[in-house]
Image (cartoon, rainbow, N blue to C red; front, side):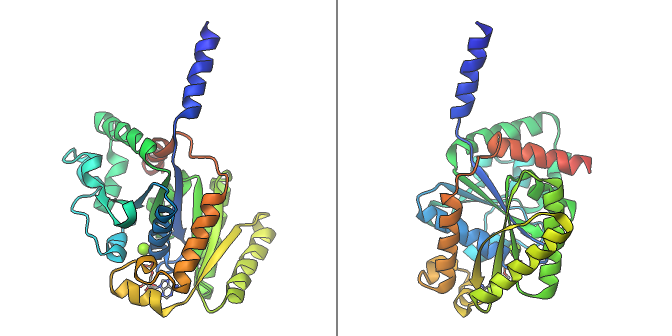
Length: 285
Ligand SMILES: Nc1ncnc2c1ncn2[C@@H]1O[C@H](COP(=O)(O)OP(=O)(O)O)[C@@H](O)[C@H]1O
Ligand SMILES: [Mg+2]
């Protein structure tokens, strides 16, 4: 009897929908994380996936700027019990949902007792509502960034062909692989002059990773340096919507297609498990 009940429970758990959680990060700042996270999220929406974009960069309010949307509330309001999670999530284009971490991110470490329970419980619903959670993180290996990266099951590392960006990407990739060997880690080269330059960057990184870490990162694509993307940013519009046929827009769509087409296991316990992990990382380090 007991075995049967356990078997049933396992079956129910298996059928529960869980989101894929993808952290977009980089070693060096200003390499194009926010543009990638936002346009990738929108390209996935175009493919009829249900997507929430979460801005967890403690630095600049990034996603707001690329989308020209200023969410009035952030996770801090949820942590302080002033707003529910549903009230903080705002609507973006194409059905995209946006959640701003804001200054609330630092409060996550101090969240305890029933407040933490209420928050974790409210995440359960998000699990059922979304196929993809895209996290726009800060740059570097500070624990406020790394906690999110290491808690994610999928990580997209962005670099440019600039030597300092490559060096910092190497440092980050090494840490992520060593501390989170199960994670699916992928590389994107942004602001390349041509596809060949991007490939050389990926090869260079992989030859160093092979030598010192005995591991290789999966190179999933490039975005070229493009004036239309820069113009879209200054107009506070995602390039995918402002210039749908621009080269960069096509690259974002191609990358989204690759990611969506891969059979990747959803995050264990989805968004709930993810935030519990981030909380633990932030607390214990
Ligand atoms: N492929 C590209 N072509 C031209 N400019 C780009 C490209 N990617 C990013 N940029 C420019 O670089 C700047 C930084 O991009 P952003 O996505 O905010 O980086 P991050 O989030 O890593 O700090 C933006 O102002 C944008 O105009
Ligand atoms: Mg950014």
